[in-house]
Amino acid sequence: MKSMLKEAVIDRIKTIAAAATGVVTSDAVDMAGFNACLFIVTLGTLTSAGTVTCKLQQSSDDGSADTYADIEGSSVANSGNTATLKQILVSIIDPRERYLKLVATRAVQNCGIDSIQAIKYNAKVVPITDDASVDASVEVIGPDEGTA
Image 1 (cartoon, rainbow, N blue to C red):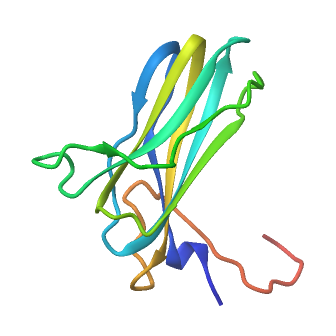
Image 2 (image 1 turned 180 degrees about the vertical axis):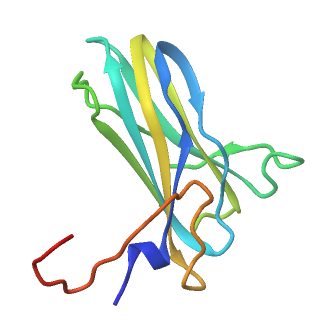
């Protein structure tokens, strides 16, 4: 049976970015040991005409000698919905290089970003070790009703 807790790593790679325009870049995601990653950009407050366009970048050495470069076809923008806490999802399977970043460009009017999370999955070896940011977790399989 597949288990998200034993086969995926969930990490918050960027915290709140106040409503503004400009670029927000996530921390690097090291894909060693994983074949796929889902990036979740949770939007904060958006002004009516504000746009957020997200794209992925990759590097073989976390930008030391190999500068981060855009990944073809990875760009996606919000639909114009100004509701708070809407999400933009960007998924990559079999990236060509080890390190990934998500770049969110906020334009036209103020746009807030609540957080950016990365879920690395399709682990090459399981079970995985939780990210250091995980404080506690529980997995319940086929439970009966009763005291939690």
